[in-house]
Image (cartoon, rainbow, N blue to C red; front, top):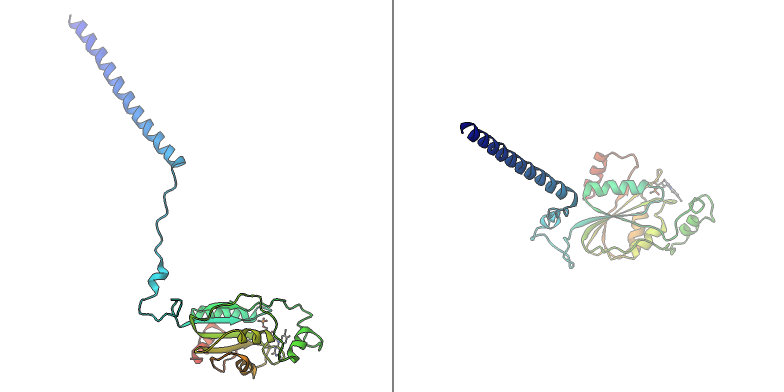
Length: 228
Ligand SMILES: Cc1cc2nc3c(=O)[nH]c(=O)nc-3n(C[C@H](O)[C@H](O)[C@H](O)COP(=O)(O)O)c2cc1C
């Protein structure tokens, strides 16, 4: 009798333990299969909303123009064929936290066009014609939010390229400080700035000056400080 009871208990014990293990196994495997499925097929979670920092940086008390943009900004408008004025313009923009605007000619200048030794070349013809106004391809920019406008160009035969006259004639600089600057092999800014002021609409034009292509950042910062 004792032996029979012992056998029944043993059978029951083995059966109970067996069931409980297979339940745990099935729970683990079903958990892992859910998480695997989630990794592969679940929808990507929405990226966290990035706070609009630009709206934080404009304080309510800052003066604004008619369009609501903060007034008092600086623009560097430049024309450059071989990249020297462009490079200086980008460096001024970085030092003054200014915006850049490139004056792009509708008809680009070929090496033959730029041959200033040839009196029949495009630049020579434009140089002789004070009324030449080469067309600008870059879209018009609103000057509303700028109170200071740097105007950069290469010296071409001791003067600003005529496309600079096209540019300054197209905008109203009233109430703005205008700072002409040039790059050149060696010629100073000369009369080129005042010639542009003459054809421009308004603006408080400073003398500006020539910036050497080899200028260091410290020297450039000093040059900018001297313009104030
Ligand atoms: C048509 C032409 C005329 C130039 N005339 C002069 C000049 O009168 N005096 C001078 O020092 N450099 C002169 N240069 C040299 C440019 O002013 C100088 O290389 C300038 O930095 C080029 O600027 P960019 O690379 O922005 O076009 C002339 C260059 C060209 C293409």
